[in-house]
Length: 202
Image (cartoon, rainbow, N blue to C red; front, side):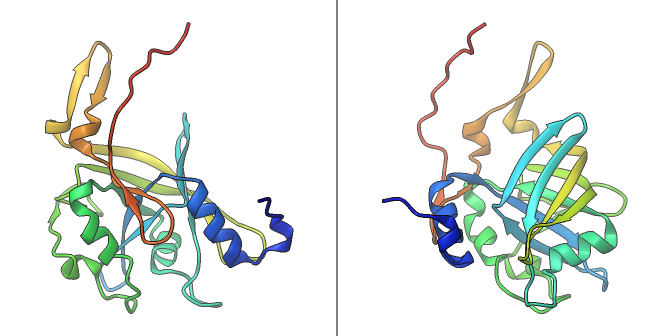
């Protein structure tokens, strides 16, 4: 069956996109609220864009027609965040952090997560094996929707020692130990299964 996107509603397009472009990595983003607490939310409209500069993009919408999601509001105000790559064992905490809470009410305590020092302005989630300190590089409104592409520049990264090793001139991450959580459609998530290693041709 063929679907013409110009004949579908935004909601119909969303469900087709999120069920066909899979699996999607999850950006688990922590920002600072204006009451000095921390907001935490997952996003799967997320992708790396460039290594020089080191850029990522996350698409973030609004809570209502006139109110930005807390992450977007904080990013625009604070110009920085800590983006975590969650592992499979954090699936319930990630899902819980997607709840719609009042602004200033932190998801961290509800998800029973702890914090560790990271950079001067923001901590990181202790239970996450990868954390990237990012600053807001640019932001673009996408069409007539509330979605905005938030471009983030990676300034530094924390990687747990137990998932990495050194190979010649590069760091190697053990994907099985990281066990990154990925998003599928609906209420479904994916975990690392069989890994196939094939050398690139010259």
